[in-house]
Length: 44
Image (cartoon, rainbow, N blue to C red; front, side):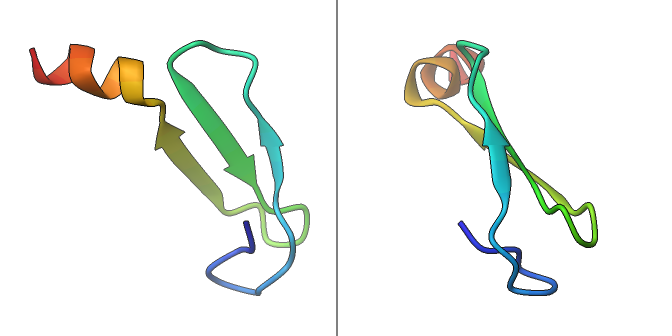
């Protein structure tokens, strides 16, 4: 995934079971991507 602000490739952390966090090493923008199992649990 590329950063929406500066188009730099983002690093990611997916060690949690509920989400994947993408962070830009240049501008430090953060994007949270909820995993499908967590998404359905949040809706219930």
